[in-house]
Image (cartoon, rainbow, N blue to C red; front, top):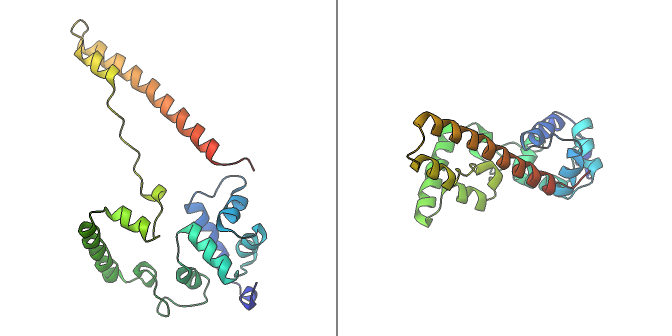
Length: 187
């Protein structure tokens, strides 16, 4: 910790809110967050509970996990102003600059044959999880077979398809939950 550690303020509440927004809400979230940020759990705990501002390397690691640059972390910590550092327009509250930046991003993305999302990820401004849209359900051969059947009524087809989709949704949800459990080590 540097001499910055003596300063306190609303930084702890902001860190907690930013962690919650990133899904660090479960039991053991503080430990997981600290590990992913590459800092001691006590550093994060002191920032949240006591408003202690961590050193620059800890701020950098925490910012990386939260999707913020070191400059933005310094602004949120109250160690610098948005005017002093090159931070995103949203921190300055300058909506015209934000609109300009988005326009430039669209042009750059189009010029490189990429999506805006790909550009944001490449620049470290967003994570894939933040930008991913759940994939549409792939074509279902069972539904196609039911719809092609000539020997059952439309009402019966609709009922069979509804039951099939409910069962399928349950299977997808079970698989998603299993992936989520396997992704997080027990804490």
